[in-house]
Length: 342
Image 1 (cartoon, rainbow, N blue to C red):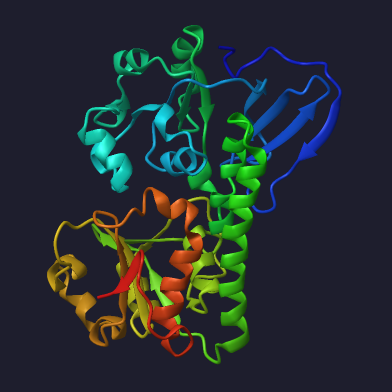
Image 2: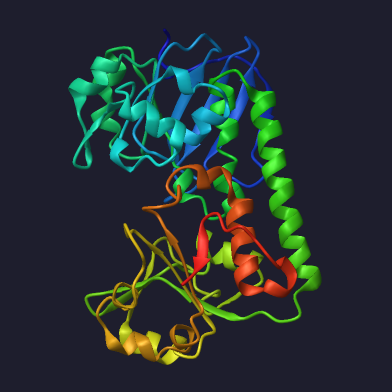
């Protein structure tokens, strides 16, 4: 097995593949039918995070650190090759969950760190990891394990995240299948967004995020969440903000800016029903918000939905959920997949 690393290549570039929406990778096809894959640092564009010289070859085993990597592997038919995954206790996908329960998938993490012995024990040809800790991966590379730093979660758009399936397509020699799968996702998403643009006569105001320790943590206007809200026909109150991370705002500012917002959205992790106390996080002031009083709170419960898994390939489902919440006059009856109203 040739690890997906290289010292360089002087081969002529015969074709360049640039994603439509994703910003984190570029693939060049070289004259010898190999690929030069450039992974970009999404926290410091246009810096290069990693460069891989890859020759299509048979893959016998895979491992991944994040549960968000699993959907890409599954969608391209490589789930039987998956031998280990990080945070396996958080896996929700029924098929993958059954593999974990049967002992077919090794849990590669202890706490928040990779367990080196378990990684070596699974003997993966490829190990998909987070886009940091590069020096820590040298020991795996030295053992012939190819490390690929995946940063789909840092993409700013729903379609940008889903488009990382194309990168997996190059590594698995399934480019055409990956292209076809992504095109179907893209077309479904764009059709829903276009319907909202054409039919929605009013955009309700929306805020998002959670309160902790006197501060409100809210996605900025250039974030995945803000784009999803906008495409669903909502008017995000901080749409004009730009930040590389969450906005951290004092509660008093949120009280002034968001108290009269029509909708409040958040991601939660709750096993069991979402109660009023859990929703307000013990702060009675949140109960005074218009969205709370009108029961216009929408949420995604990551303990009960595959938000940290299959959702990466179902942005169109998340979008349709929000359209049904913001514009029931457009969507009508809808079977919610990820988001629902409290």
